[in-house]
Image (cartoon, rainbow, N blue to C red; front, side, top):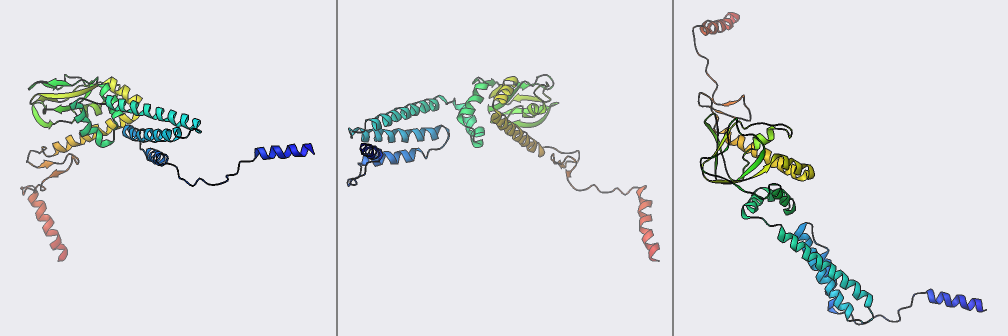
Length: 298
């Protein structure tokens, strides 16, 4: 009998308490606001701004949750957890804000990012590594000074013009201009393997005071080995720059008769076909070709 009563007491103690009545009053507005802010926070995206958006809303959400938990003296554990999460999210907001503040550049580097890298979706973090690779240095070329001499200057860097204009010549003949945010030595860079060495086959002279940024060859290849994404970005930019230079040359290539060549089709010349000269050697052949059909008709 005693054993049966003990079993009943154990069963009763293991059962969940039955809710006698539902709470007729809804939770306060702070409770609902906290959950709305948490939902908005978990909708954040990627990247620095996405993280900043997410942790800002999570910080506000857990703060409201902590206020609601503090109002109920029977929810000590709930308050402790929500307040700890509030502090953690607040620390993340400060950390991400500091990193965003640190990823800032000089005006010329910012212009370079906006013109060349931003449209390709390159993040500020990756661009920061690119700037670090050149040590953040900007070089200057005075007017009529040369960036490279034909057959004398070695190919040991990759450079982008930031301001000014560069004249490109070969054997004293003008080829084309290099304008801001174009590579100075993209054809030379693309023509060599990492282990090869070479010299410029053209002369680059400044038409006015120019400023440019340069990455050393070995240091840039080391960056490519560490970050394949950056290597792909530079490959795209360099080859696109080479294509633009070829198209700029397309309108300046003429043969001895004044007809324009299409550099995409080197064997094709934009011009009428040359007429056959009526010489004494070709005249018998023409007469023979005209008499043969008459003989066949007869």
